[in-house]
Image (cartoon, rainbow, N blue to C red; front, side, top):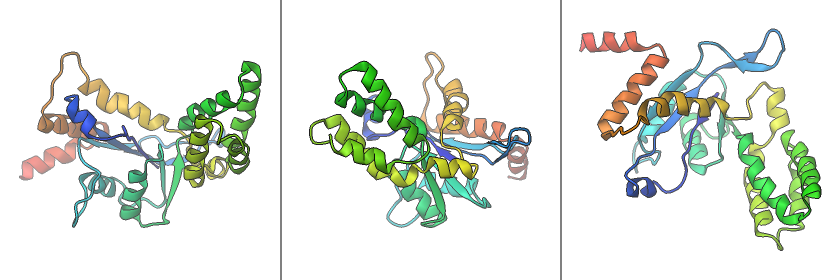
Length: 242
């Protein structure tokens, strides 16, 4: 399983603010829990890679982010990617693993905000809004998205928020097969990657008053990932040989 964190937007806004975007990918294996039968992360299978790099591929060659993904996912039997639906993530994965060889899942936690805004625009009464939201959300949770799109589409011309939600669902409908994915033991949320952002990057990099050079930041993130991945011995062996 591969979770990819996309901080989103134009990278120039990070430069203007004097900050940079760190991309974290976290891979892990899932298997049924022997007690409950529910899919769970296999202990010791989590591996991560973090760096301030670009996902934009050069005219001839491989992007730095693509190279990291290819290296970390080497040997995986089945690839499932949970993301926020950003096009660059799917494009990168298609180049690495081949188009059609990856199951893409829209992080289920990205759905409620857009759907809530649409329902609120249609239903001014709070009680009716809550009832309608829960009804539609129960359909989305199991991957029955088409009826939701049809119902919302009838109000799309009158409400901008509804039109936005309809466009969002239509663009991601192939990533919202939640019932099918859960039946196959796949995750539908990004809790693992969100936790990784805090433990791998934020907990070490965002110290009070901390300032990082690009080289220093990438070096400390690489060391932190190696330590968490239990690969420090490999690093020492490589340094000794060098």
